[in-house]
Image 1 (spheres, one colour):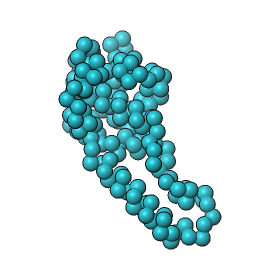
Image 2: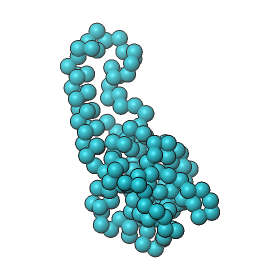
Image 3: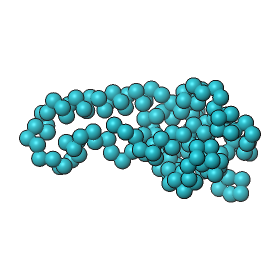
Image 4: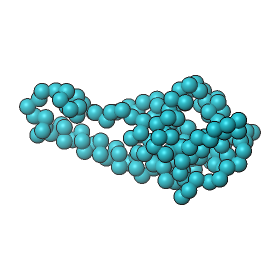
Length: 156
């Protein structure tokens, strides 16, 4: 299984916002930190906002902040919002294959169990875990030199 770039950068965007805790993060700054286009990040922002993982603040001094505390956003939360399909084989897709074993296949059962284990592990890790695992994250993302206006912390 391979996660999409959208999921990869969604996690990175959330990590940036978590590391920039108490300040608004701006898309151009996030794009520069990761070397990715602003347009791509704006595209990712929409499903994250809809799911309540981030909030946007409009206006000249606007930006992006986490929609809830970083320790309450799991990797599974992000993956289920940003990935279109979890079909590990064509038999996972409804009506995609005419196999007589589809409902009683050992491979199908094994893959479903593996996917469940994958989701369980993702649910164990939060954005906060990822940020705390990198004590130098603010330096690496250029946040030490760049500070946006102070904001209220997200509700716990």
